[in-house]
Each structure stands twice: as C-alpha cells, then as structure tokens.
Image (cartoon, rainbow, N blue to C red; front, side, top):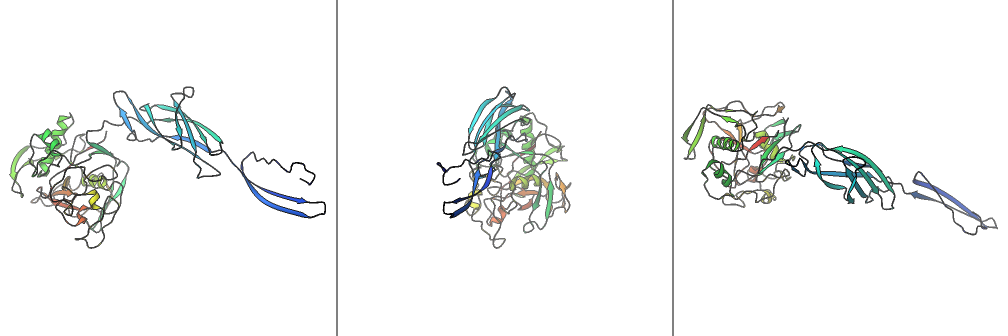
Length: 416
C-alpha cells in the first residue's frame, strides 16, 4: 500500500487455514511512519467425520426377533481444529450400499436411533459435518451391526459382567476384600419376586402380608430354589437344582418349610437360579465403589449411621413400618430396584465369614457348608426392619438358615 492507493484494501489468503501474522506499515510524504502487527485466523473445515455403533449385542435399543431387525444407536463425531467448542451440524445418510444411501438425520446432537437394522448387517454411511461458518467436511464408511440380542426373559435386565473385575466386600463391613472376575453376562430380575408371580408359578403364597405387588417373603433357601425350577419348567428351560427327595421341616421361624435332600446345583444349565453372592454384589454396586450404590459412603459410627439419601433408594426402619411394594424407590445404575432395603434376599452360596484372598473367577462360594449343623446361606440387601443404614450397604451380608426379616429373592439366568 501507499498513499496513492485509491482503495486501501488488501485481500489475504491462506488456503491451508489456520492463523497467519500480518505486519503492515504506512509512510506519508513527510517520511512519518506507523506500523502494526496483528493475527488473522482463517477458519478450517471440520476434521475426521466418523459414524460408530456399539459392538455389544446388548446395545440394541429394541429388537424384533420375528422380523430379524431392530433399532441401533449410532453416534456421529468430528473435530473442529479452530474452535473446539463450536456446535457442529451433522447430516447423516445410511443404506445397504454406497449407491443406496438415504438421509436419516440432520441435527446437532450427533446421536441417531437407526431403525430396521438387521443382525450383523453392513450399514454404509455418509456424514456431512458443517461448522458455524458454513465450512463442511464429508466422511464415508461402513459399520457392522452387532448380533441380535438374546430374547430377554420377562421382568429381567442384562447385567454386563463379562470380562469385568471388581472388588467385592468392604474392609469396614466384611473385614476383607475379594477380587472377582466374570467370564459371562447374566440376566437378573429387576425386582424381588412378587407375590403375584410366586402365586402364578407355585400356586401358593406363604407371605406374612398379602398383596400381589409386595415381594414374596417367608421363603427359605430351598423353596427359592424350587421356585426357580418351577419357573424354568414353565418356560421349557433346564432346571438347575436337582434333589433326591423333598421333606417338610419346621424352621427356626416356627413355620413348616420344604427341604431338598441330597441336592446339587448345576451352574452349566441355562435355567433360573438364585444369584451367587458375587453376582448379587456386582449387580447391586452397578459400577460403584462406594458403600451405597447411590454414591455415598458410611459416615459416623458404624451401628448408628444414617445416610441422608437412603430414603430415595431404600425402605428401612426410618421410613417404613412394614414390607413395601416393589419398585417404589429409585433404581441403581443397572435399573435394579430394592437391592437395598425392603426385604432380605437369598443368594446361592453357603455362608462363610470371610472371602478367599486370591483372585476368584466366576466364584460360587464354599463347596460345602462350613458348619453343617447350621446350613447357613448368604443373606443380602438389608430389610425395612433394620435401623442403621449401614445394613443397606452393597457389601453388607449375613448368614442364615431360616427366612428371618425377609426371606425373599430374585432370579438370574446366564446369557446365551
């Protein structure tokens, strides 16, 4: 530029985008000068447009097994090299081949539920990403849909445990910890077995308070196993519990209960059964490492502690004077209700006061009752009749032979 320039303008270009430094100076006829330095940032188009889908067969939003297709969540992403906080606009097209694409999404969220996707299908995609200045980038590719999910048993939710490791127990509550690893996923009832379902399957209801939405109670461990067998038979599944005979015995609660004689548990069978203690605690914690599955730790004295958030998640003696209907409180992160409070729940394991110190893979507890005269099984979850909310901790456990303060349960099935 000089002072003879009619239009004091200059066009600057930076084809690669990004910032450039501009230094300019002006001098008049008398030799006086002025100079300045400034930065100009040239906007660049978004980078790396990508569409992804989950690999897990349990990731389907829904799946129609008769039609062989379902709804699969897709995620879109890209990066803005100049303004990472910019809101990008995504335009997604998908189809069975690159030449058969149809536009299915246009928006800012970057999430789309793709309908009518077949199990194991190859889905081709084109993603156009635009930033706030109108610059665009186009990406293409394909994804492979996961295998179809197994048919979900009614009332159950999948617990994603396969290849997971967690610390079981609590130094404060159980005196030692146990490292557990799973090689499988499993289904678990989202609530305790209701009296309505128990009556439907078994044909009787021994509970202390009657009501279809209430959890069944006053069930001993053997009767819970018999229910599991009956539920399996009703759906054409293998039974897990085998026994030579049944007898009636009067329990410590003064009631007559069934007892399996010479029984065995076959964990290889794909039928309903009680959860192992490790399965129960893993499902209860739902990924948390705190004392309570809603994210808090025990504060104050062990026996008199009161957690301020317990009322939102659990029935206990501070907010209930009797057993309550299932699923009235908030669930944990896996969607399971009443894992703490309301009624105690049976686990499959024989009770032992401590855990093995070494890594346990798919543990099922002691092989035999540590004290045959007691025949104690693991009792989990706490009860409406218990005071200190430490009893609601994910790690809290007791061993009992009779269904005192509960006697309820929920079932599991190992996934296919």
